[in-house]
Length: 235
Image (tube, rainbow, N blue to C red):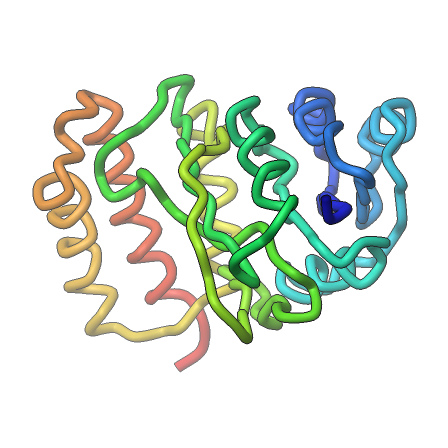
C-alpha cells in the first residue's frame, strides 16, 4: 500500500485539533504547518505525535503547498483544522491507496452550521480534491479560495468527511469578513445584483428551505458575504 501523509495548516486551531488529529492517525505521517499559534495548537499536535513545522503566513494556497512540500510521502491528503475524517472515509482511503486508479480524488464534505449537518442549499456533497499524488497535483497560489490543480485523472471517493464550518453567526460573520477582504473584487453592479441571486440559488433552487431556519440564515449570510466581496477593494 502507498504511504500517506496528511497535511494540516494551523493557526490558533486548538478548538477541534484533538479530534482532527485523531481522525488522521491512520496515516503514516501527520504534518502540521503552523503560522504562529498563541494557543495550545502546537502543544496538542506534538502530544499526539504530529510532525510540527513553522511557516509565516503566505496565504492559503501557498501555505498549503508549503505543507505538501514538507511532507515525506508521495500521496497526500490535505485536511483543514476543522475537518474530521470519518471511519468510513479512512477505510476507503486505505483501500484506494492499495492500487490507485487516479492521480487525485475528490472527497465529499458534510458541513455543520450552528451544530446541525446541512444537506441542502448547494452545501452538500461539497466535493473538493483532497487526496492526490504530489507529483501530479499542486495548490494554486490564490490567497483565499485556493484549489488543487491536477495534471492527470481525477476520481471520486464516496465517503464524506465532517466539516465544523461555523458554530454561531458571530463566527460566520468574522470569518467571512476576513475572506471577503482577502478576495475582494470591487464591482458595484455585482454588489447590487449578485447577493439576490446567491440567496435565490441557495434557498430556493438548491432547496435550502429544507434545512429549516438554519437554511434561511445560511442563505441570507452568504448573500451578505457576496455583497461584502464586491463592495470592498479599490475602484
